[in-house]
Length: 152
Image (cartoon, rainbow, N blue to C red):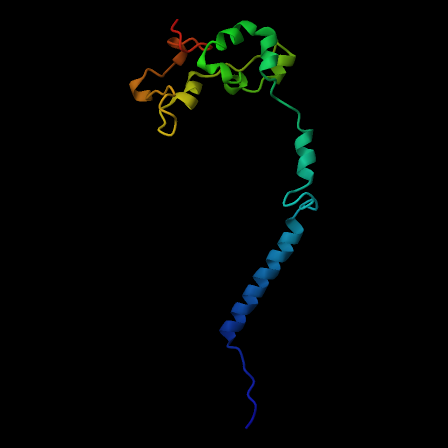
């Protein structure tokens, strides 16, 4: 009785070759596209630390605002917004802090809606408005920007 050699059907042979080509392509791409500093500090790109430390800061902080705008910060300290950073509404202000002649961003009225638009995920005690039921075209027409609980 002759020994029969098992031959793979051509369809299976093609599928195996395709899977092999995909695996080899993946390994080659991973080798070429993975940065050399990857895994220096665990599952991270080590060079990212140096890049992040090299970024120039853009935020000045509340202390820089207090140098010129202490009256506004004193008013703000009496309100619920005392914990907010000035730059949360006005944007990054390091350039303005270094050069007071440069313009500071005056936020649009709709910036109030970022926090005060009705959202069921917020606590019940948090002041929220339903925009369609509240006059929301310009918050500062009815509210003092740095003491919104007061009416002008």
